[in-house]
Length: 229
Ligand SMILES: *Cc1c(COP(=O)(O)O)cnc(C)c1O
Image (tube, rainbow, N blue to C red):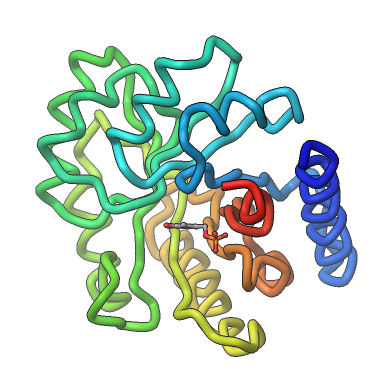
């Protein structure tokens, strides 16, 4: 089992590097966010020695259990819909929130940043495919959303995030990823005060296509840990 985890990690890293090569990008520009949500705390502790440093969780309770259980110097990202009343528990503990999806949440985080003592680093989640089942702003609402949170000094918006619909053929996700990249370019051009650096896109099924389309953060869970959880 141990061998297979380290194989999985090196495989995913190799596939990211190859996708970068195809796209003429530097492998260093893509960060692997290991999604540990399917691992319980015991399993999670077992995979720490394999050297992954950046972890993504989508439920606050699951994140806190793991955060409290390990001393290792890890970087934590919240990647799923965040309820406002759970945000306080994250103060001082997370490096990036990928899933800013409403003005209410923005206002809550902005207020909490005073307790935290520094701004939250966030990505705005965009529901590019317009699926009813997914959170995130409609692409047409993104521009005014960014204007509305501009004055919130407790938020630092570093980019955009999306979740593509699951398709057997990852090529079908390509237009979604491309659209997110275009939105980032469009927002950067029309709002020079923004510093959008990141595109969080791509999961186990489609991360290579996402990297080819410009992802800087890929969120991979089952391909790393599927056999282990
Ligand atoms: C679970 C999850 C992932 C990882 O999905 P896999 O298909 O297991 O790689 C990525 N992003 C989000 C938002 C998730 O909830």
